[in-house]
Length: 183
Ligand code: IMP
Ligand code: MG
Image (cartoon, rainbow, N blue to C red):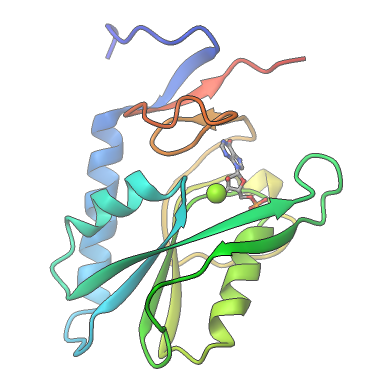
């Protein structure tokens, strides 16, 4: 750990690669337990691009039948107008009608994105919809959004790594690090 050289914009490592691996494996155990006995594959729906690393690590530890799918969205109003409008840029390839769905997201901030996605998916009459979120910033919630599987709570700071970016940078770092705030 002590030998990680942080890129210049980053202040400190909040979650190491080892901590992440351990937690993701615990979440996979829970999911394997909860969906044991399902007769049709669980559809993991990852939200591009942030959730890619979490989804692939999680999926490789699942023993219940599952397939992976992705959506791409764009949230308007981040920063300025806080009521973020969510638009679909790419929908799932598979139909989710009558299927068990697990939405996989990188981080829960205001809750706008995940609550919109949950409503949208529920309207398609799936068998069930649950949510797995790698990071949660409880201090930032604006819309109550229950999560079924949560990696870690973090403070209200901008984090990067493990899929999370700052203007597309730092997504591929294997750890989660806190950015130095830009004033
Ligand atoms: P929400 O709709 O406000 O909950 O926003 C969730 C989205 O904001 C996430 O999917 C991320 O794309 C982005 N986001 C929020 N906080 C961070 C962060 O600390 N680092 C990187 N992306 C973040
Ligand atoms: Mg995102």
